Figure 1 (cartoon, one colour):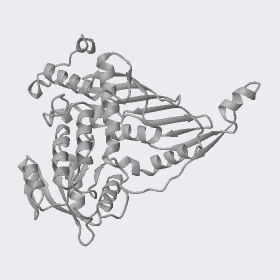
Figure 2 (cartoon, rainbow, N blue to C red; figure 1 turned 180 degrees about the vertical axis):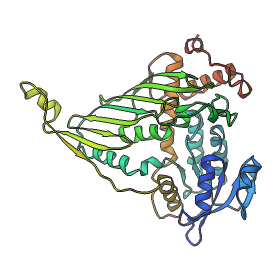
Figure 3 (tube, one colour; figure 1 turned 90 degrees about the horizontal axis):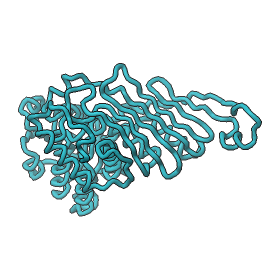
Figure 4 (tube, rainbow, N blue to C red; figure 1 turned 135 degrees about the vertical axis):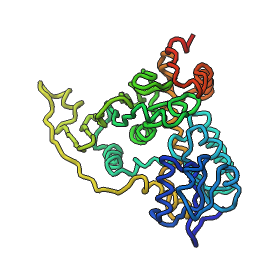
Length: 387
């Protein structure tokens, strides 16, 4: 495998349903400079029929060994990410994965171990965490890294905008099941937010979560989550997410000693203490620090989906550093796993998470659920999982 510089990178999309179909259409339309859609792969003939003039496969193994592509973009159901990625990496192809990187940390580790043994050093392994390219989150990260907020004290993120009706889960039998999806709102709707959490604030040391399984839908997995995260810096965090509320809120509060940021769907505001809270507490006789409010205006960087895919392609061509390596993706998987594990074991979980322990718990959940055919059966209570 060498950098592709004299022709477009030939990319195949494996899984051309929802997200994969959008990526395939972007590539087919020439929306990503330096890349072309060379093939598609899906077990559903109807999904394949939407694409003409390119190679079509129903088996990823045949595609990977066809010699027709330089890279694969994986957008299949979650459990298939790991085996397909490992197969493609070992065959010398570039790999881009949709979220989540894997269902559980043990599979993510196996993927990264395969990448460490890749045949060609120039192969890239990226993940499509497009929100890192959102100018607002990039701006927030700059405020944190430059120290403008001071020492971080508290973070609270309420993410209840990804409402899903019951029909969403009935549309595909694998959705909403331990055996098919491996998780709910944390594995499906929240990987971008969990990635941003560790990208902005680092990984916590401890997690105590309270997930509710099938609270709003007839599913096995979690659709309502409240988690408390403790960081080694002393920062505490609260993360709230659900697919059962409408219209929903996406509000991130970041409180530092020197300033507070509030970021939601409509605003990005900085509230700066004219005297840092810690200094004011030591020296003032009463009251609270005066505050200067500033609205932060950022430039629109366009589609974050296209931006992250463009970066992957430029990295394949040796023109840029890969900004979202798959090695980062294991962190969002670990956070999701830790929240589910904490709930079902009814305990605070220390990180790094024991990957083997969570793998065993997930297998227990699959066994007790009865598999995909019985996925509408109510999940057992958390206490019964631990006895």
